[in-house]
Length: 119
Length: 108
Image (tube, rainbow over the protein chains, first blue to last red):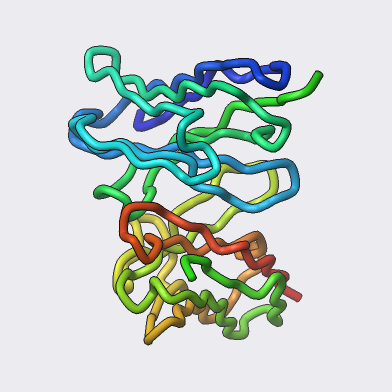
């Protein structure tokens, strides 16, 4: 079955860190760019970060640049998002998404993992 | 500006045609993608590129773009088309992605 399954969300204090994972299955993971997209409660979608199929290039939204790092492990078919210096405004449901081409269209989404930043 | 602007809400009578608008300078250079999101669910891609539908998306969904304005058209809207619709495109730099604020579609 073609799917993406996120994990690693939870409650973290402001200034803390968290690493999200996204396990891919049912397609050739190494052929596709991937991204993270988040959605704050009751709000719209916000693109967070993207990584090329090879992992050689990355891109970040200004709101997370310098605090978040996107990476991938082709041996595990897994996408990661390392989140440091977390803020209350980072509270959101985080989705991973498969890109048809680099920064083009997301044709497969996971169900999301919830990150709550609160003291 | 790298922003994408959408009307917050649109309504349509059952079986009628509705157009959802997305505006932004980057649309002069890049085609948008359109996503449908229903409550409690992940977004689903409905239109990408010039006017392409992924497998499984009904042909009542279509897309067009001219200048800084892109349209998602639903011809013969159905009750199951209710939800939030987001456009997405690269920003003017070409190195980042932006989503529009979303349009809530109500089918009356």
